[in-house]
Structure formats: C-alpha cells, structure tokens
Image (tube, rainbow, N blue to C red; front, side, top):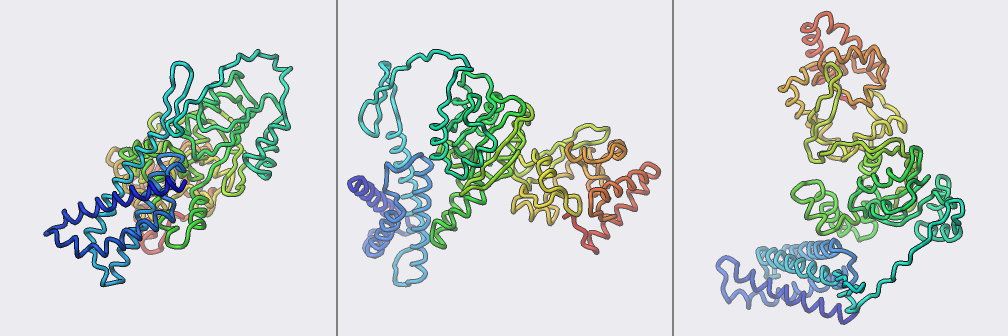
Length: 510
C-alpha cells in the first residue's frame, strides 16, 4: 500500500512540475527569469498540492471501484487545491505567483491526471477471456479458473424446497433488520414464487427459467442501474398483474444531506457542487450524456424521488408503500399494467406535454421544464397521496425543482406556449389545457363543454380566483356557458378582468 502511495505521489510531482514548466513558458512575456522568481512559490504550491491530495486519498490507486471514482477524486482534490492557492495569493502579498500560472498549472495537471488515471483504471479492470476457459486479471497478474457449469435437473415446482433461514440471513446482512421487517409485510420470502436477487442488470431477471413470480425483491440500489427503465420493464415482464416489486434508492435530497454531513464546512459544499454537476447535470444533456455514462457506467447516479417513481409508473407499476430507512428510500410497487411511455422522451429544458385540445384531440403543449423527468406520470400518485390544495394544485408537490419554482413565480415556464398560440392549438383566453389524468376529475358535463372550444393561455382562474376543485369547475362552467352564447364578448371581458387581477390584486396560481 505504501509503495503504491509513493508511486502515485512521485508521478503527481512529475506531472505538476511539468505543468508548471509549460505554463511558465506559455506565460505572455515569459522568460527564463520567471523560473528563479517563481521557484520558492512553486515549492509551496507543490507542498499544498501533495498534502491535500494525500488527505483526500487521491493516491489510493487500486481503491477505485470505477472510472467515475477516478474522475471525482481528481476533480474534487484539484478544485480544493485551486481554491486554497488562489486564497493564499490574495491573503499573502509576498506569495509571488500569478493567477495565470496557478490556473494553468492546475488545469494542465488535472487533464494529465485524468488521462493517466482513466488509462490506469481501464488496464487494471480489463479481463481477457481465453478459449480454454481462463480469465487473466491484469490487476493481480494471474489467471483465474472458471468453475465448470454443472447441469441441474429440473424439479417439480411443488417439490422445490426453499432454505428460508439462508434467505433471511442474506436479506438481513444486505439491507439490515429494519428494512427486512418492512419487506416482510409485502413479500413471502419463503415462497418459491418470490425471487430475491442482488443485481443492477436486467440480465439476472431475464434469464430466470420460471416465467412468472408473485414478488421480486432486489437488494441493489436503483442508483446503480445502467438502464433503469429497461430493468423495470424486465421486472414487469416477470410479474403478473398484482405482482409485487420491492427495491430501494438514495434520493437527491438524502444524498445532499449525506455529503454535507460527511465533509467539513466549505469543502462539503464544494464537493456537493462537483458531485451534482457530474452526476445530475451531465446526464441530462445529449452532448454530455454519453461522456457521463462512459466515465461512470451509470453507477451511483443522482436520482430524485419524482424521477424514480415516475419511471416506475411509466413502466406499469403503482407505488403501494414507501419508507425511509437509513439513507435510502425503500418502496413497494404493484404491477398494474404493461409499460407505456413515449418512445422518444425529452428531458431537456423545453418539453412538449400531451394535453386535451378541442374536440378531445391530443395536442402537444410546449413549456419550460419545471419538474423532474418522468414527473408527469405521477399525477394519480400525487392526488391519492395528498389531494389538492387551494387553487386546485397538488399539495406539497415534490415533483417541482428549485429552478422550476422560480420560473413558475414569474410565468417563465409558460412562455413557450406562445408557439401553440401561433400554431392555433390555443387561444389567448380559455380554460387551462389539461392532462388526461386531471381531465378525469371533472364532471361529465364539464368534460363535454371543455372540448367544444380551444383551451387558452390565460384561464378563468384569474377572474374568479377559485380555491377548491369544485370552485374551479364552477368557474370554468360559468365561463364556457357564457362563451357559447357570446364568444368574442366573453373572452374580451374575461381577458381584461384577468389582467387587472394579475397586475393589481396580485392573483397567482399557487
């Protein structure tokens, strides 16, 4: 271990020294005189670099479980180094070092470390399968013998014996006593129709010979699934309607609390910012998504509760129960149907939501994203869990992001709906375009009236300011009946009343 630490440390010293040499040469007006004037400061810089890198265990080498760990260790360590050195420049005037050289040395060294680190990880994790059934492991420099596959005789299902004691010990060791007791309420672990696995790939589920199970219990976090929806699809295929799926994950909120508690103040927020950027922001954009999965393989992904549950609902499940245990959220999901979600979903900042238009025809309403991905599938879940608050919105809507709340306050999220106005899907004033789930809450009479005219950008909500779902329906019913008699006059009067209430009475859709 000490030898590996020393090797990593020496390599890092060489990289930093080389980066320093390159940056001094590249500095505008650079000359050989810079080397002597910056030499003392360089040794201080190098000492800070090695000390912080050692404290944050950047040189542990074989301790990395994936290329994402290499990326995280280098970026976090070097960002802290940059912060410390730049602070020293401003605090100590006699610290003779330019910002150009500091930034350049850190940047070049970081690039070099990432390149060598990722190459090192790829080499030690590479395994070559020989035709004779051996595997050569570069990390240990040895060949590992594979056990020959022994054919197992198929038994009658009624004669299959389950080692319940072993299953109980396995589950308790993996997830703990409290989680085990939670699972015990929903999964008959002593049944041959209960599949208990610990995997992050769909392959384990797909290769099961038994066509269907009453319950599937997985003890691997959803955060570590490479293809989350594909995994949920495979589980769905192995369950009958009414079958139970149990798993768990770490939510975005839990992850933030864990990181902020783990590190000292200052470093914890810096670490969290880097972690959030790499594992939450990068996967959401087309240009950086492939890079993210190349570096991390999707392991330890940042997931919000809304996204995970939304994925479950889109794959044909309904959340039956949930419980936070430790730093994870365990869930029990019931299969209610086959998977159904868009073939080409969009998770970018601009989204197209399916709404009911004139004549009951579906239209795509454009909006800025204010919710977590897949959150649109949770409308039934939200209504059953919390119901509606004053104004007809869902109470305690955790699906909305922090940025989404800001955009909703200033109606920024609704600006793209002007595209629908130009296309002719919407008119300036009219009832709000509704999703099918929300539309089902309305009375049959109001449903029929709604689809006789186009929805609008500005709804009658801002005229009557209703507080309950019943008041909202009465408000829309009153408007639609008036609109059928005098379309232009009704919209004209309602429009100016709404504008007045928004500007002077500060009416808001809460």
